[in-house]
Image (cartoon, rainbow, N blue to C red; front, side):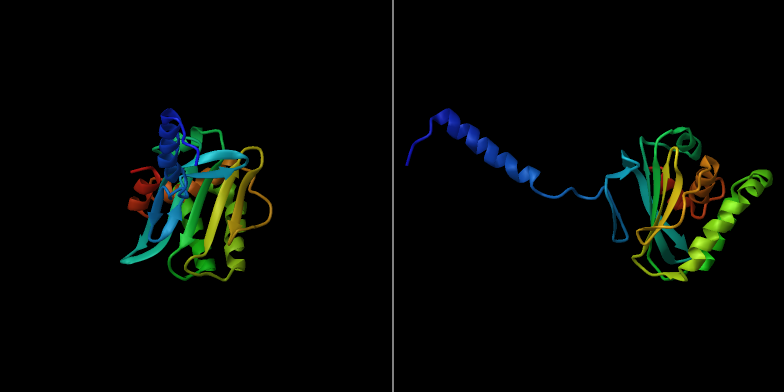
Length: 198
């Protein structure tokens, strides 16, 4: 057996100590009710970071977990509107829910968080969003839907990983959708705080 010089032995020992640190897979940035939200996500070819994640409660029940990904941290809906890059909201169900009812709740959430004149301009998009969920009948615990905003393309809805028709091209529509969770009358105040990094 060839004896290594002391300096080489020291270097090899240091490398062996460092190797286990790189081996484990990246831990999720946040785990909410068993749903893991990674620290980063790629949308439109751009890396995004997890801004926040939390739970939607209804009475004593946990309904779904939601995570928000942005190009840089934001603490309000206005700050998010000012960001020019891609964005993602990801929702994973924790209870079985009627999809048509979910679509109606989203429509009501959009309406509750904007002026009537602005809402009336978005009615075609709101109706189409409701139709997307109605087609799926129900969402089961563990099933997910996402909305990705990509500049120049629009807001693409994914249900169970599958894209649902063409993107919604209006930036105002995606911003109105975020208003469901982050507007002045959010679906859940605690979820709003969590998504905004609170």
